[in-house]
Image 1 (cartoon, rainbow, N blue to C red):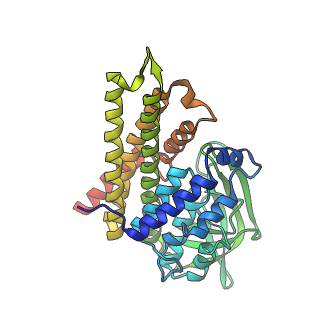
Image 2: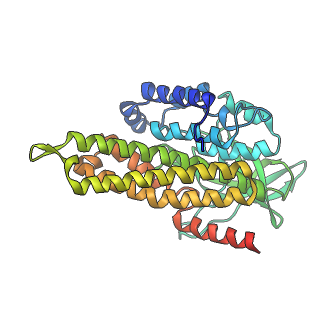
Image 3: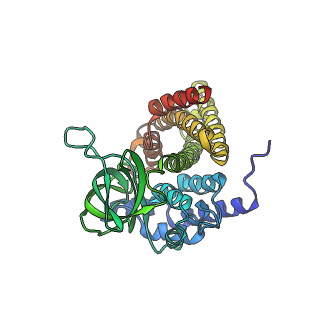
Length: 367
């Protein structure tokens, strides 16, 4: 079977990879993390200009790609370069807009004129329980939202929010502009780089996206696209950690010989290589499932997330352990890759959540 990405996707991958290597290496990343903003808008804008966001969406929606493997290429390079920005939120929010035919908004995002994010996770109250869910009510010709969303990617930087909200007994999605009345954001840095925020809506004006109370399946497919993106980002990071660990084992000497000659470490490297290939297979399967749509997309995405959670944690731990103390230092890139890989394992549901989801979806198919 041919797993090549094709000429156009290879060109895109090369362009994004070269840009990140030239403009957003380890030194630039550390500088961005230490800045008051906590990320580099300049690097994000450069990736947008090269087509990183446009490749996520179809031509009909205002992009120039939109397939699962276009998403795979973009997020693979994001992983390799440890790029920071609202890429994941933009993808999922954009897929909701794409399904509703909201091309004007997507064109603004693809052109770099607006930042878009996805507010879908429930916020937590001070006691750790879920805060008030977001509810939508009719208000004249539009709607108003009340409630809270948590860990919204780049919430204080976003110009537009796609928000999941209860409308009656069903789910709807809404578009909210930054600075709208009743909208407040509490922003904070996240551990693996970049920013997020808790977003509160209080009678906040919002525009309905698509049909009211018809958003459940659309959101499921948007989240499936996000899981495919994470699978490919995680796979790319696993490749980097494997390669950096092999390089270190060849260079680091003990008793006058490279420690990579020690059989115990060779066995551990063999295990790492197998885990990387398993993650690759799961990522390919998730992309194929997304192309098929429906229940196949959801099951394949959950399967990939389970594989990534298990294998990614092992890769991160092994890379740190075989590098020794230096692997934990802030200045050393391995620690940043390992941290991001661990966090990917928890985004959009952890390994346990997706294992149960995979089982439940299988029961639904069999019923």
